[in-house]
Amino acid sequence: MVKVSLRKESYRCEMSNSEDEDLPQLSSHALAALQEFYAEQKQYADLGGDDKCNIGIIEENWQLSQFWYTPETALRLAEEAVASAGEGGRIACVSAPSVYQKLRELHREDFSICIFEYDRRFAMYGEEFIFYDYNNPVDLPEKIAAHSFDIVIADPPYLSEECLRKMSETIKYLTRGKILLCTGAVMEEEAAKLLGVKMCKFIPKHTRTLGNEFRCYVNYDSGLDREL
Ligand SMILES: C[S@@+](CC[C@H](N)C(=O)[O-])C[C@H]1O[C@@H](n2cnc3c(N)ncnc32)[C@H](O)[C@@H]1O
Image (tube, rainbow, N blue to C red; front, side, top):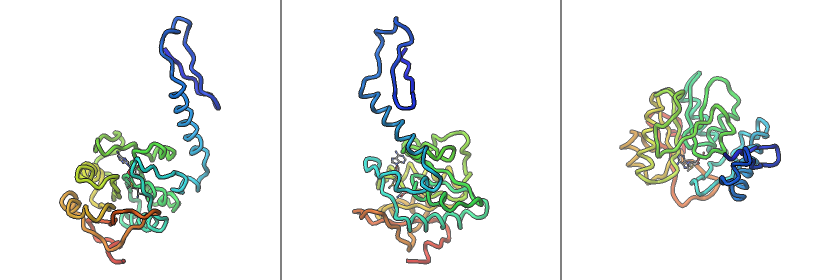
């Protein structure tokens, strides 16, 4: 059996006894990857309160289709979520980490939040982080009860019918009713069909210029539809 002992600075493979010498050990490549992973986790764990709210500390990973909102857009969406969730409301941020971070930054105690994310770097948020893969839309921990969030804000990673359809399953499982979806303008028809949402006047902005027009969609009377 290979035992990997994790020390503060170094990671060593130890064999449990001399008889195990023929058994495979972690390659230096695997060890280096493990070391990098733990160093990254430690770096996030060491961050102070307000630093953790800053989306800039987590770089966009384009392999994961990560495109962060501008701080203004993230704040606008966070405020919308709070207003719509109501006093003591529960808010689910599904693949929308910068809105989650803005909600944290508000430092308010009159709502609760969860971040559903595939990128485990966001596990630094502890109990509020729920690992989520849209390919398994309702494969969620037991503690996440059906229809237990007042509003779900979601931003699917891909502009495809399949991705939106699968994520819609998650959204419908989580929400008590309200949905705030951010995705491409090209998804308008599919979004209406799958979730009964309609496009708002408010236009979300990203820190980088994207090739596709982005929009917000809601299924309730929202402030986002009263402004340009
Ligand atoms: C288009 S970005 C939306 C981010 C949003 N604009 C923000 O600033 O918070 C898509 C999100 O989906 C996440 N994602 C990537 N692959 C995923 C998967 N298989 N399941 C669920 N989410 C995924 C990414 O990590 C990213 O946060």
